[in-house]
Length: 324
Ligand SMILES: NC(=O)C1=CN([C@@H]2O[C@H](COP(=O)(O)OP(=O)(O)OC[C@H]3O[C@@H](n4cnc5c(N)ncnc54)[C@H](OP(=O)(O)O)[C@@H]3O)[C@@H](O)[C@H]2O)C=CC1
Ligand SMILES: O=CC(=O)O
Image (cartoon, rainbow, N blue to C red; front, side, top):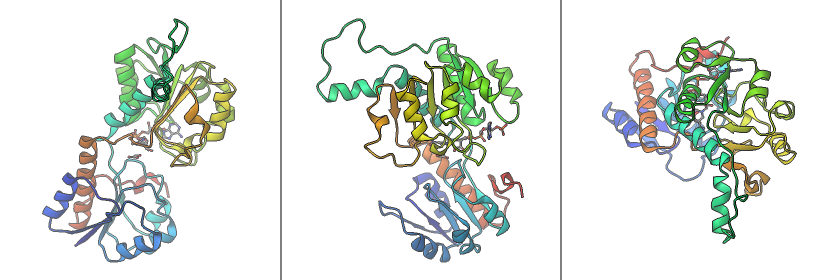
Protein backbone atom coordinates (compact mmCIF):
# COMPACT_ATOMS: atom_id res chain seq x y z
CA UNK A 1 0.00 0.00 0.00
CA UNK A 2 1.23 3.48 -0.85
CA UNK A 3 0.78 6.72 1.08
CA UNK A 4 1.53 10.14 -0.34
CA UNK A 5 2.15 13.12 1.99
CA UNK A 6 1.89 16.64 0.55
CA UNK A 7 4.58 17.97 2.94
CA UNK A 8 7.38 16.36 4.93
CA UNK A 9 5.60 15.20 8.10
CA UNK A 10 7.01 14.84 11.66
CA UNK A 11 8.94 11.71 12.54
CA UNK A 12 6.30 10.17 14.83
CA UNK A 13 3.67 9.89 12.11
CA UNK A 14 6.14 8.92 9.42
CA UNK A 15 7.61 6.04 11.41
CA UNK A 16 4.12 4.76 12.33
CA UNK A 17 3.24 4.54 8.63
CA UNK A 18 6.53 2.88 7.76
CA UNK A 19 6.26 0.38 10.61
CA UNK A 20 2.78 -0.52 9.35
CA UNK A 21 4.51 -1.62 6.14
CA UNK A 22 3.37 1.18 3.80
CA UNK A 23 5.54 2.82 1.18
CA UNK A 24 5.55 6.52 1.98
CA UNK A 25 6.37 9.15 -0.63
CA UNK A 26 6.73 12.71 0.66
CA UNK A 27 6.66 15.99 -1.26
CA UNK A 28 9.89 17.49 0.08
CA UNK A 29 10.23 20.62 -2.05
CA UNK A 30 9.86 23.95 -0.26
CA UNK A 31 7.08 25.06 -2.60
CA UNK A 32 3.57 23.86 -3.28
CA UNK A 33 3.10 21.24 -5.96
CA UNK A 34 0.90 22.12 -8.90
CA UNK A 35 -2.65 20.68 -8.95
CA UNK A 36 -1.58 18.43 -11.84
CA UNK A 37 1.37 17.07 -9.82
CA UNK A 38 -0.94 16.44 -6.87
CA UNK A 39 -3.32 14.43 -9.02
CA UNK A 40 -0.42 12.47 -10.50
CA UNK A 41 0.97 11.50 -7.09
CA UNK A 42 -2.51 10.60 -5.83
CA UNK A 43 -3.20 8.41 -8.85
CA UNK A 44 -0.27 6.29 -7.78
CA UNK A 45 -1.31 6.10 -4.08
CA UNK A 46 -3.85 4.40 -1.83
CA UNK A 47 -4.03 7.16 0.77
CA UNK A 48 -3.30 10.86 0.87
CA UNK A 49 -1.97 12.51 4.03
CA UNK A 50 -2.71 16.14 3.39
CA UNK A 51 -0.82 18.94 5.13
CA UNK A 52 -1.36 22.49 3.90
CA UNK A 53 -4.22 24.84 3.19
CA UNK A 54 -4.74 24.31 -0.54
CA UNK A 55 -8.31 23.77 -1.67
CA UNK A 56 -9.43 20.20 -2.31
CA UNK A 57 -12.33 20.89 -4.65
CA UNK A 58 -14.74 18.63 -6.48
CA UNK A 59 -12.61 18.57 -9.65
CA UNK A 60 -9.62 17.27 -7.67
CA UNK A 61 -11.66 14.83 -5.57
CA UNK A 62 -13.26 13.32 -8.66
CA UNK A 63 -9.83 12.30 -9.87
CA UNK A 64 -8.98 10.70 -6.52
CA UNK A 65 -12.06 8.65 -5.76
CA UNK A 66 -9.89 5.51 -5.60
CA UNK A 67 -8.19 6.81 -2.41
CA UNK A 68 -9.13 4.94 0.76
CA UNK A 69 -8.76 8.11 2.83
CA UNK A 70 -7.68 11.73 2.71
CA UNK A 71 -6.18 12.24 6.14
CA UNK A 72 -5.83 15.94 7.00
CA UNK A 73 -2.94 17.00 9.21
CA UNK A 74 -5.16 19.68 10.76
CA UNK A 75 -8.33 19.97 12.77
CA UNK A 76 -9.81 22.44 10.25
CA UNK A 77 -11.38 20.95 7.12
CA UNK A 78 -12.75 24.12 5.52
CA UNK A 79 -10.38 23.65 2.57
CA UNK A 80 -12.15 20.43 1.55
CA UNK A 81 -15.41 20.26 -0.40
CA UNK A 82 -16.97 17.85 2.13
CA UNK A 83 -20.21 17.59 0.16
CA UNK A 84 -18.34 16.42 -2.94
CA UNK A 85 -16.12 14.07 -0.92
CA UNK A 86 -19.12 12.48 0.78
CA UNK A 87 -21.03 12.09 -2.48
CA UNK A 88 -17.95 10.50 -4.06
CA UNK A 89 -17.57 8.09 -1.13
CA UNK A 90 -14.22 9.55 -0.07
CA UNK A 91 -13.36 9.38 3.64
CA UNK A 92 -11.94 12.59 5.11
CA UNK A 93 -10.35 12.64 8.58
CA UNK A 94 -8.77 15.30 10.84
CA UNK A 95 -6.67 15.62 14.02
CA UNK A 96 -8.86 17.07 16.81
CA UNK A 97 -7.90 17.64 20.45
CA UNK A 98 -4.13 17.22 20.39
CA UNK A 99 -3.57 20.78 19.14
CA UNK A 100 -6.01 22.56 21.45
CA UNK A 101 -3.42 23.62 24.04
CA UNK A 102 -0.86 24.91 21.54
CA UNK A 103 -3.47 26.83 19.55
CA UNK A 104 -5.05 28.36 22.66
CA UNK A 105 -1.55 29.36 23.78
CA UNK A 106 -1.14 31.22 20.50
CA UNK A 107 -4.40 33.12 21.05
CA UNK A 108 -3.30 33.91 24.62
CA UNK A 109 0.10 35.11 23.39
CA UNK A 110 -1.59 37.40 20.85
CA UNK A 111 -3.98 38.81 23.46
CA UNK A 112 -1.15 39.83 25.81
CA UNK A 113 1.03 41.03 22.96
CA UNK A 114 -1.69 43.36 21.73
CA UNK A 115 -2.56 44.57 25.24
CA UNK A 116 1.09 45.58 25.81
CA UNK A 117 1.89 46.54 22.18
CA UNK A 118 4.73 43.99 22.37
CA UNK A 119 5.35 43.45 18.65
CA UNK A 120 5.38 47.22 18.05
CA UNK A 121 7.82 47.83 20.93
CA UNK A 122 10.13 45.14 19.56
CA UNK A 123 10.12 46.86 16.16
CA UNK A 124 10.94 50.24 17.82
CA UNK A 125 14.05 48.74 19.39
CA UNK A 126 15.14 47.23 16.07
CA UNK A 127 14.77 50.65 14.46
CA UNK A 128 16.87 52.34 17.20
CA UNK A 129 13.78 54.11 18.58
CA UNK A 130 14.00 53.04 22.26
CA UNK A 131 14.25 56.79 22.97
CA UNK A 132 13.35 58.82 26.04
CA UNK A 133 11.01 57.08 28.44
CA UNK A 134 8.28 59.00 30.30
CA UNK A 135 5.45 57.80 32.58
CA UNK A 136 2.93 58.50 29.87
CA UNK A 137 4.78 56.76 27.03
CA UNK A 138 4.37 53.20 25.74
CA UNK A 139 1.17 52.53 27.66
CA UNK A 140 -0.78 49.37 27.02
CA UNK A 141 -3.86 48.12 28.81
CA UNK A 142 -4.49 45.63 31.65
CA UNK A 143 -6.23 42.31 31.04
CA UNK A 144 -6.88 41.45 34.71
CA UNK A 145 -10.57 41.11 35.55
CA UNK A 146 -11.81 42.01 32.08
CA UNK A 147 -14.47 40.17 30.08
CA UNK A 148 -13.38 37.56 27.55
CA UNK A 149 -15.90 36.75 24.83
CA UNK A 150 -15.31 33.42 23.10
CA UNK A 151 -16.98 32.84 19.76
CA UNK A 152 -16.85 29.05 19.42
CA UNK A 153 -16.46 27.50 22.88
CA UNK A 154 -15.30 24.08 21.64
CA UNK A 155 -11.98 22.33 22.21
CA UNK A 156 -9.66 25.29 21.62
CA UNK A 157 -12.03 27.99 22.86
CA UNK A 158 -12.43 26.14 26.17
CA UNK A 159 -8.66 25.95 26.73
CA UNK A 160 -8.31 29.66 25.92
CA UNK A 161 -11.10 30.47 28.40
CA UNK A 162 -9.48 28.29 31.10
CA UNK A 163 -6.12 29.97 30.63
CA UNK A 164 -7.63 33.47 30.76
CA UNK A 165 -9.73 32.71 33.83
CA UNK A 166 -6.84 31.12 35.73
CA UNK A 167 -4.25 33.76 34.80
CA UNK A 168 -6.31 36.94 34.93
CA UNK A 169 -9.62 36.13 36.61
CA UNK A 170 -11.39 37.09 33.40
CA UNK A 171 -15.17 36.84 33.26
CA UNK A 172 -16.10 34.41 30.47
CA UNK A 173 -19.02 34.91 28.08
CA UNK A 174 -19.48 32.87 24.92
CA UNK A 175 -21.61 32.34 21.85
CA UNK A 176 -22.08 28.98 20.06
CA UNK A 177 -25.00 27.58 18.10
CA UNK A 178 -25.67 25.24 21.05
CA UNK A 179 -25.04 25.72 24.75
CA UNK A 180 -21.91 24.08 26.16
CA UNK A 181 -23.22 23.26 29.62
CA UNK A 182 -20.12 21.37 30.80
CA UNK A 183 -17.94 24.38 30.02
CA UNK A 184 -20.48 26.75 31.55
CA UNK A 185 -20.21 24.83 34.82
CA UNK A 186 -16.44 24.52 34.78
CA UNK A 187 -15.75 28.11 33.77
CA UNK A 188 -18.80 29.86 35.18
CA UNK A 189 -19.29 30.97 31.58
CA UNK A 190 -22.40 32.80 30.40
CA UNK A 191 -24.11 31.96 27.10
CA UNK A 192 -24.93 35.16 25.17
CA UNK A 193 -26.18 36.16 21.74
CA UNK A 194 -23.71 37.24 19.05
CA UNK A 195 -24.66 40.90 19.52
CA UNK A 196 -24.25 40.65 23.31
CA UNK A 197 -20.83 39.09 22.76
CA UNK A 198 -19.84 42.05 20.58
CA UNK A 199 -21.20 44.64 23.00
CA UNK A 200 -19.94 43.18 26.31
CA UNK A 201 -16.47 41.75 25.53
CA UNK A 202 -13.20 43.51 26.32
CA UNK A 203 -11.42 40.77 24.39
CA UNK A 204 -13.14 38.71 21.68
CA UNK A 205 -11.37 35.51 20.71
CA UNK A 206 -12.61 33.52 17.72
CA UNK A 207 -12.49 29.72 17.83
CA UNK A 208 -15.24 28.63 15.44
CA UNK A 209 -14.63 26.71 12.25
CA UNK A 210 -14.85 28.55 8.93
CA UNK A 211 -18.24 27.72 7.40
CA UNK A 212 -20.66 29.61 5.14
CA UNK A 213 -22.32 30.79 8.37
CA UNK A 214 -19.13 32.15 9.98
CA UNK A 215 -17.49 33.52 6.82
CA UNK A 216 -16.63 37.24 7.27
CA UNK A 217 -18.95 37.43 10.25
CA UNK A 218 -16.52 39.97 11.69
CA UNK A 219 -17.21 42.79 9.28
CA UNK A 220 -17.98 46.51 9.37
CA UNK A 221 -21.29 45.93 11.09
CA UNK A 222 -19.81 43.67 13.81
CA UNK A 223 -16.79 45.89 14.52
CA UNK A 224 -19.14 48.87 14.88
CA UNK A 225 -20.94 47.09 17.75
CA UNK A 226 -17.74 46.33 19.69
CA UNK A 227 -16.27 48.51 22.46
CA UNK A 228 -13.75 51.14 21.30
CA UNK A 229 -11.39 49.61 23.90
CA UNK A 230 -11.88 46.01 22.64
CA UNK A 231 -9.17 43.61 21.45
CA UNK A 232 -10.05 41.27 18.59
CA UNK A 233 -8.20 37.93 18.41
CA UNK A 234 -8.45 35.49 15.50
CA UNK A 235 -6.49 32.23 15.76
CA UNK A 236 -9.14 30.24 13.86
CA UNK A 237 -9.40 31.14 10.16
CA UNK A 238 -8.71 34.41 8.35
CA UNK A 239 -11.89 34.00 6.32
CA UNK A 240 -13.94 34.67 9.47
CA UNK A 241 -13.01 38.36 9.40
CA UNK A 242 -13.14 40.88 6.58
CA UNK A 243 -9.64 42.33 6.62
CA UNK A 244 -10.51 45.63 4.89
CA UNK A 245 -13.21 46.23 7.49
CA UNK A 246 -10.81 45.27 10.29
CA UNK A 247 -8.22 47.80 9.07
CA UNK A 248 -10.92 50.51 8.89
CA UNK A 249 -12.25 49.62 12.37
CA UNK A 250 -8.76 50.03 13.85
CA UNK A 251 -8.00 53.21 11.91
CA UNK A 252 -11.33 54.76 12.93
CA UNK A 253 -11.02 53.71 16.60
CA UNK A 254 -14.07 51.44 16.56
CA UNK A 255 -11.90 48.82 18.29
CA UNK A 256 -8.55 49.20 20.06
CA UNK A 257 -6.39 46.34 18.84
CA UNK A 258 -6.15 43.03 16.99
CA UNK A 259 -4.09 39.86 17.22
CA UNK A 260 -4.11 37.56 14.23
CA UNK A 261 -2.59 34.13 13.73
CA UNK A 262 -4.61 33.82 10.55
CA UNK A 263 -5.18 36.43 7.87
CA UNK A 264 -7.45 37.02 4.93
CA UNK A 265 -5.84 36.26 2.51
CA UNK A 266 -2.81 34.17 3.53
CA UNK A 267 0.02 34.87 3.34
CA UNK A 268 -0.43 38.49 4.42
CA UNK A 269 1.22 40.96 2.06
CA UNK A 270 4.20 42.70 3.76
CA UNK A 271 2.71 46.12 2.83
CA UNK A 272 -0.48 45.42 4.80
CA UNK A 273 -1.16 48.49 7.03
CA UNK A 274 -1.97 46.18 9.97
CA UNK A 275 1.73 45.39 10.28
CA UNK A 276 2.53 49.03 11.11
CA UNK A 277 -0.17 49.53 13.74
CA UNK A 278 1.05 49.70 17.39
CA UNK A 279 -1.90 47.70 18.76
CA UNK A 280 -1.71 44.88 16.24
CA UNK A 281 0.20 41.59 16.43
CA UNK A 282 0.31 39.21 13.48
CA UNK A 283 1.72 35.68 13.30
CA UNK A 284 2.04 33.51 10.17
CA UNK A 285 -0.55 30.80 11.03
CA UNK A 286 1.58 28.99 13.62
CA UNK A 287 -1.24 28.09 16.02
CA UNK A 288 -0.30 24.43 16.45
CA UNK A 289 3.38 24.75 15.55
CA UNK A 290 5.22 23.18 18.46
CA UNK A 291 7.41 20.10 18.17
CA UNK A 292 5.24 18.09 20.58
CA UNK A 293 1.94 19.11 19.01
CA UNK A 294 2.99 18.55 15.42
CA UNK A 295 4.32 15.12 16.37
CA UNK A 296 1.00 14.31 18.04
CA UNK A 297 -0.94 15.55 15.00
CA UNK A 298 1.18 13.41 12.69
CA UNK A 299 0.51 10.39 14.92
CA UNK A 300 -3.27 10.92 14.74
CA UNK A 301 -3.15 11.53 10.98
CA UNK A 302 -1.10 8.34 10.52
CA UNK A 303 -3.54 6.35 12.69
CA UNK A 304 -6.39 7.52 10.45
CA UNK A 305 -4.48 6.30 7.39
CA UNK A 306 -3.60 2.96 8.98
CA UNK A 307 -7.22 2.33 9.98
CA UNK A 308 -8.48 3.13 6.48
CA UNK A 309 -5.87 0.97 4.74
CA UNK A 310 -6.44 -1.99 7.04
CA UNK A 311 -10.23 -1.92 6.76
CA UNK A 312 -10.89 -0.56 10.27
CA UNK A 313 -13.25 2.33 11.08
CA UNK A 314 -11.24 5.58 10.96
CA UNK A 315 -10.93 7.25 14.41
CA UNK A 316 -11.56 10.82 13.28
CA UNK A 317 -13.97 11.04 10.34
CA UNK A 318 -15.40 14.42 9.40
CA UNK A 319 -17.73 13.45 6.52
CA UNK A 320 -20.72 13.27 8.87
CA UNK A 321 -20.29 16.98 9.66
CA UNK A 322 -21.57 17.72 6.19
CA UNK A 323 -25.32 17.29 6.50
CA UNK A 324 -26.35 15.70 3.18
N1 LIG B 1 -4.46 28.93 14.01
C1 LIG B 1 -4.27 27.64 13.87
O1 LIG B 1 -3.18 27.19 13.53
C2 LIG B 1 -5.39 26.69 14.15
C3 LIG B 1 -6.68 27.02 13.86
N2 LIG B 1 -7.69 26.14 14.13
C4 LIG B 1 -9.09 26.51 13.81
O2 LIG B 1 -9.84 26.44 15.01
C5 LIG B 1 -11.12 25.90 14.72
C6 LIG B 1 -11.75 25.32 15.97
O3 LIG B 1 -11.10 24.14 16.36
P1 LIG B 1 -11.65 23.25 17.59
O4 LIG B 1 -11.80 24.08 18.80
O5 LIG B 1 -10.79 22.06 17.66
O6 LIG B 1 -13.09 22.88 17.03
P2 LIG B 1 -14.39 22.48 17.84
O7 LIG B 1 -15.29 21.83 16.87
O8 LIG B 1 -14.05 21.78 19.10
O9 LIG B 1 -15.01 23.91 18.25
C7 LIG B 1 -15.64 24.75 17.34
C8 LIG B 1 -16.70 25.53 18.09
O10 LIG B 1 -17.31 26.48 17.22
C9 LIG B 1 -18.71 26.50 17.45
N3 LIG B 1 -19.36 26.94 16.22
C10 LIG B 1 -19.37 26.33 15.00
N4 LIG B 1 -20.11 27.04 14.14
C11 LIG B 1 -20.57 28.12 14.83
C12 LIG B 1 -21.39 29.21 14.49
N5 LIG B 1 -21.92 29.33 13.27
N6 LIG B 1 -21.65 30.15 15.43
C13 LIG B 1 -21.15 30.01 16.67
N7 LIG B 1 -20.37 28.99 17.06
C14 LIG B 1 -20.08 28.05 16.15
C15 LIG B 1 -19.07 25.06 17.84
O11 LIG B 1 -20.19 24.98 18.70
P3 LIG B 1 -21.66 24.76 18.12
O12 LIG B 1 -21.61 23.52 17.26
O13 LIG B 1 -22.51 24.62 19.33
O14 LIG B 1 -21.99 25.98 17.36
C16 LIG B 1 -17.83 24.65 18.63
O15 LIG B 1 -17.99 24.98 19.98
C17 LIG B 1 -10.82 24.89 13.60
O16 LIG B 1 -11.97 24.64 12.80
C18 LIG B 1 -9.72 25.54 12.81
O17 LIG B 1 -10.25 26.29 11.73
C19 LIG B 1 -7.44 24.92 14.69
C20 LIG B 1 -6.17 24.55 15.00
C21 LIG B 1 -5.03 25.40 14.74
O1 LIG C 1 -4.95 25.53 11.18
C1 LIG C 1 -4.72 24.46 11.64
C2 LIG C 1 -5.66 23.43 11.88
O2 LIG C 1 -5.26 22.41 12.47
O3 LIG C 1 -6.82 23.57 11.49
